[in-house]
Picture (cartoon, rainbow, N blue to C red):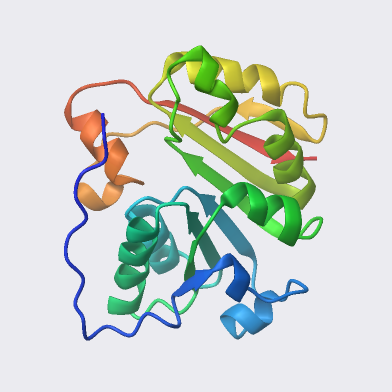
Length: 213
């Protein structure tokens, strides 16, 4: 199922605070320079239209949130949601999440990493393009603090079990641990737009959470 069109963005919104490119991030890494404060940092890889980032930033104002999305139009729309709601504890990055983890994020710098509904790249010859590779999972484990969390959700059962097999080889991550399932009471109970679409169609979602030891 392809992505749907991105709604128009209010041209009066100032996005400079909430939308960055990888080259605009502090180097060396300095989250205080990015957010203006020191706080636990959570990163979402593949933020899409930004529903999770928006709701997480509103629900946990004591944390900072960084989203990254390779499709610029989606990153820009996500940033507009943050700017509209003046959520200064969240920043959207337009760029490659693998590069962010590989080149920029230091060891033990994150409270959590979130990966929700990544592109499954259905054909076997294309699976090397998947986000959840052994290299990325090793980088994610390296960047998560002790007792920090790694969240992975997908609607593709094969991708779920294949990734769990890869995660079993990451010695620093313990899991999978039980993930509580509840019926959403309203649209804001969904973590992402993709989950909303799948759940409303009655399709299963496969969830896992791992803890950094």
